Image (cartoon, rainbow, N blue to C red):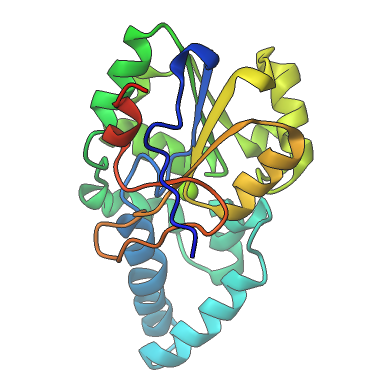
Length: 226
Ligand SMILES: [Mg+2]
């Protein structure tokens, strides 16, 4: 397996714009995993008088059928679909939201190098609001873009074309870091040259390197000069 690491692959003189995913990339995905895979099935089972594993299997199937679409991250969609108050439930769990190690250092590093830094996320605006209110990262971004406002998910090449128009970026001088290979693949098709896979999206899950994209465990690896 090619375990190429991003280390030494970044020449910061070639980068003007840093595009960063939120969940799993900057923030610990444990929060989302716990919320969707444990907390929601638990509440759903109680509400529908089912046992946990029946509720779990049903919900996993329903999530899967929406993966890679805007509905997947739409809290209002899931509230209607499941008969639960998802946004309120999420807000009550916000003590579990954590920023990954070295992320703040990396954001400061990018600002010190005068790079434009954008958060680009498939997250729903309500999720985004909860996470920005709980963490200290919002002030480091030049702008935050949700795929909901773009109209398509990041897995779609169209997302990047519309983003270019919106932000006036030069795609040849962009770096994108994401923990989703399908997103990196669509960005590659669009023409972003520097693509970084975040191999440890959750503090509770093992490192899984991408076979296709340079992988990092922590952002400190991108701060080592070439
Ligand atoms: Mg992500």
